[in-house]
Image (cartoon, rainbow, N blue to C red; front, side, top):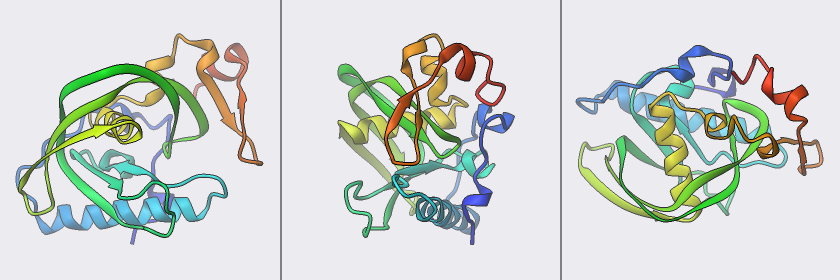
Length: 191
């Protein structure tokens, strides 16, 4: 059983590598999915003000295009996930909206990241069957964030030149602005 200790974080260079396509959904892949779900929930259980929304396999240091996304973001009691193997955005739609994002691999840092508010995604499920999803709002943001992970992109990469876009989560669950020069620009953990 995987735990939050198995989740790699920046500055681990593996988070910057591209993940490989899954050819066949094997028992190993199914085991990886279980580990991803367990690690996400264990992470959530260690946090007071956050929910484990999703995880990409690379965050467990497994370079495969596998993503798990929580089925209900608003209900912490629903601890189930949907699985997306080889996920790919086929179409970006709607408008680009800035909103807050965090990441299990970037502890306590949040950013205001621009993302499309609607995307179409194709992937395979755990049985290897092709699925298509049209995602809007927060779910669209989650898909873009996780699919970025499969390409070696972390959310901070989208805002590296936006000093006002970085925040830290305080102990009381509120976000505070970070001093870009002091806390972000030369932070060896982020870059």
